[in-house]
Length: 84
Image 1 (cartoon, rainbow, N blue to C red):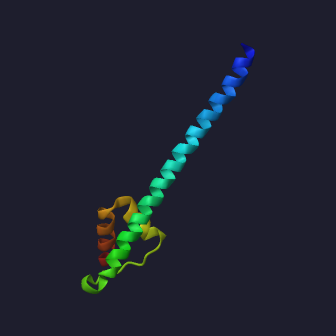
Image 2: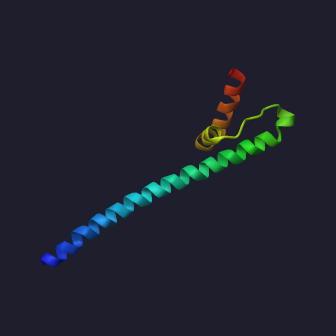
Image 3: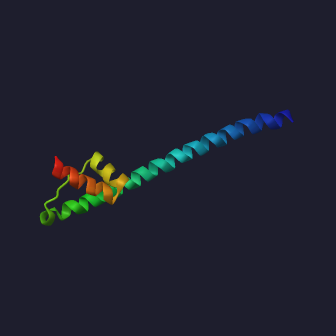
């Protein structure tokens, strides 16, 4: 019985650690995918900037704002461009 607990406790700790790491990786993938979507939307918006007159420098901050917030983030960037 003592051998059973000497194997069970480290296995449970390892399982908990791996589960915690997997949650972090899932969160990081979600951030990366949303940032890429923000980058793509800003790139498309810059493609039509000749017609709209709206141009955004594509960098990490603007891509993350557009990626995290989506369409409201792009609207926020447009409003900030006209305010500043």
